Image 1 (cartoon, rainbow, N blue to C red):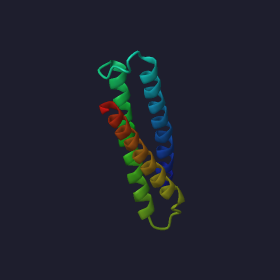
Image 2 (cartoon, helix red, strand yellow):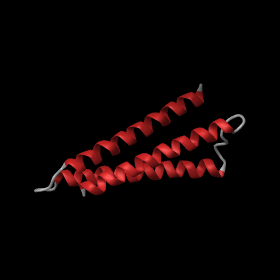
Image 3 (tube, rainbow, N blue to C red):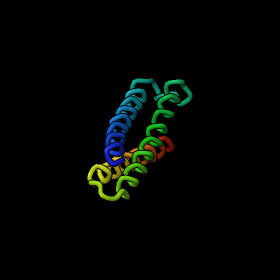
Length: 103
């Protein structure tokens, strides 16, 4: 479970980074900013939410891996750290984006 947590958290971390880069490109290339009701923006939002959910599953697998007896726990701990870091960074970026939108 620890190795699965580690692999899932790394893959979703890279996926999340890619989604935020795509969102930034969409925002900067559209005149007046990205249309939030466009199909591309909605799909991008669903991808980000889906990746966050997958990252929470990775954290759960990491916790389960830490709780297993007679196993090495390094990958489980790394999976937990990477997945929680990704979730926190994504939420912080969303909050910053919402704050900038209102001002």
